[in-house]
Image 1 (cartoon, rainbow, N blue to C red):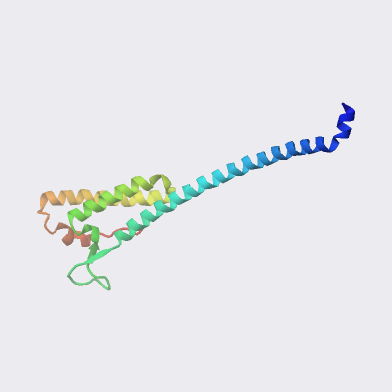
Image 2: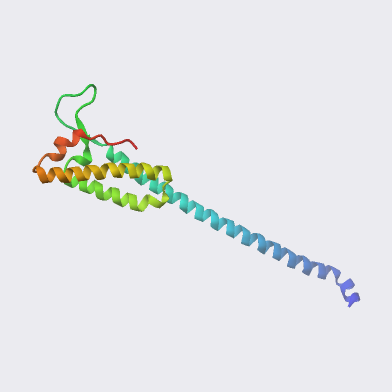
Length: 156
């Protein structure tokens, strides 16, 4: 047996080297795939977070659109109100869109941004309740456009 190993030492070393090489290559291949999978998962999470922030930014930009009404300016400010207060339907559409964005984006937002979003939602819930009460007291023909100037949309 010893003579066989001495005569074929190069073949034995080649087999041992091949086995060790394949084991090491397999180990690094599994490690590389595992790392690649983690990076792809992290990339998807970052994409979701960016998409959620984009939805919030789009919503806040929509909140900043103003409608100007006739009246006397106060200082440099024209009398205006947020466009989503133009009518009851516009407010309801905005309210629906806000709920949709909030439910889709909630898990991807930071705690600080969630807190600001909830503050804004609380403000709008109060506004919604106020308009409900005003509609029951007065006909809804110009409620939103006439009284919309009373509200300031908080900056986010």
